[in-house]
Image (tube, rainbow, N blue to C red; front, side, top):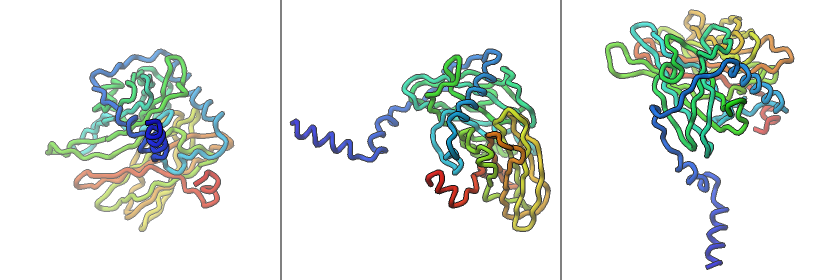
Amino acid sequence: MKKIALILALLACSLPTYARNLSRLARMTFTNPASLTISPVEPGVPERVFAQLKARRAAARSGVHTSAVTDSVSARALVIPAAGSLAGGGGTFFRSDVTLVNYRSTAQQVIAGLWASGTTNNFNVANYKIVTLQPNSFVTVQDFVVNTLGLSNVLGSIVIVPYTGTDVDPFGAIDGFSRIYTKQPGSNGTVSQPFDAVDPDTFSAPLIDEAISLGLRQDADFRTNFGIVNVDEKDRIFKVTFIGEKLTTTLTLTVKAFGMIQQAIPAGDYGALQIVFQVTNAGSDFVTWIGYASSTDNITGDGWVSLASADLTPDELDLIGY
């Protein structure tokens, strides 16, 4: 019997990690969004938490962050680059359904907030809520901006940070996903675009001051928007270059501190299109930021999102172990 037990133990140890972890993942449970605990945020808390988050990231930096090559993992903090609840053109109304996951075996408080497009976000507590996620669970909230944050008629970036009740929780392990969608005018069917939640430290200028969104299109049949999230306490200047098979153009713009912008690209028939983002006033500061773009079919409203990824050289890939 002891020999059989030993053989079984050795067999278990020899299994691939994913096989041994199946039982843990199988314990993940669904949380009814109606049962979520959502609480107001006290004044000063968002500002303190984001200052702590920045300090932790600065202390931890010893090289290029691995997310610079677009990974998909659970994280200590999350940004959903674009989300909202607002009317669009042509009879559309866009909403964002958000899924949040807590991989810990204990309940996890998070601060969830929205940084509205085109503004400096001054940590107004009206834009934030404390949400308690159940252990080993996931929850999907329809129209998250309205039903969780209590906001409406707004487009922005959702930021989510694990929270102990007083400070950033250094042991958080969360993940997320969002779908922004609208009903097709004259139909009960919907068209949507996905937005993965990303680590706010995805790019850190001056280490990573340039990134590119691939696979876009603008011509008679398609239109393209682009966006930038500035996860920094200072306004940052970006040079954005639109490189198409028929047309190339450039513009320079400022993204406010702890803010985001989303807008249409300059008019023109570009055909197939790539967009290059570059921070131009980082200096020696570590500036954390995210770039993205989306193209949309002018007839059906169908579209796709391209999160910007760092254009690293072979030597830089070697440096970070890829």
